[in-house]
Image 1: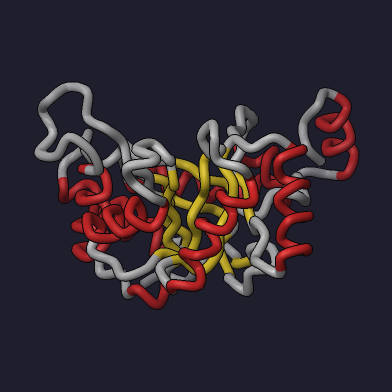
Image 2: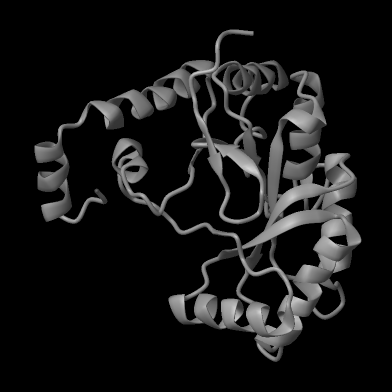
Length: 240
């Protein structure tokens, strides 16, 4: 393994250390060969990336072996084939609430873990709870995953700032873990996003090992920007 180049940073107050770049998968690995997927994961590992993000998706083509969650099956297969040790990597996944109320968050995560071949994930991102589910009730179910040991921390996906603020208020009042991360969409270039002090890690996808190496280069680019260049970027709305 080559010398790591991607630094680690704290994931909020969770006590979890994550690399400043994270490798996403979602629908990536179904579009490339297994050997290519393994090479991509190994390139990420060799670069010092320890943060892998996955998400279940539903097959709408009828061609996948499973109608839902095949991306998680492939992720697990490649994860093991690439030689990752579970204790050296941070894995995140999503809680979609898609089949609520027939499927509770606990059952949804259990199904995902079964497809991935894991006994827990480190970070679960929750989509906005469905209509009829109050934020207090949603947080009781989400933090229940942490109490059960199937997740170590939780974050938000597509929540508003008001919902985030309410979540922290509830966490303080009830003495339960609050959200430690959020995953907003970034349309800015990776180096620019890395300049934002509120950004812990930047998520990217790759179908070739060379793309992993190129994305790691964004760290060096961000470091080379002068204060004047950062000010000019900030003036047009790019994070400092």
